[in-house]
Amino acid sequence: MLGGVFSRARLLARAQPLITRGKDAFVRYSGSAPSSTPPKNFLEAGQIDGGFFQGTAMLAGAIAASALVPFEAQLTMLTKTVEAFRYAGLSRDAISDDVLLTDYLRKNALAAQNVLIASPTFYFLFSWITGQSVAVCCARAITGTMRIVPFMGFFYGAFAILAPFATQYYMKQGGTTYEESASTANMALMLGGFVFIEAIVELRGCGVLFTQMTIR
Image (cartoon, rainbow, N blue to C red):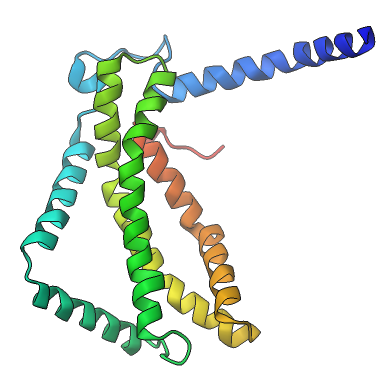
């Protein structure tokens, strides 16, 4: 019993420097380190910057387009999008029009929407953990969400375009079923580069500048 207690104590003593360094690094990169330059005003504290306005403008434009563009025009654009996939070499034998629309275009659009809906809660809690005031947490919940709009649009848009072709490739090369090929294609795309885009998305939402992003 005592041996177990002493073993845990020794383990904690050895781990303490690692925990402290990890905590210091987390605080430093979150922008709340004591040595970092404190924000001069609420705009800086709430990270109300160019990225916030760009994301807001893009989201407002997308919402306005979906609301103002007539349904017939939207249907025409969707039909031309499907035709573009066929022109680029996506076979109907491998992926039908219904599957293309449902599993790739619609699913990725809904995924992007769900991420934007959930993001304010995430960025509020992140700011709260780093010791910000409630007002600043509320501001960053909104600014962080708006800041990731362009990157989320690129992430899910590119995934919707590339995933059908990757799935078709694995269906032809491996002779596997659609479900197996789709799963393999998604994994290959994520490990092939999309995971880094996702990391950039989260870092930007948390207020990290591009100049602060390094690989060590």
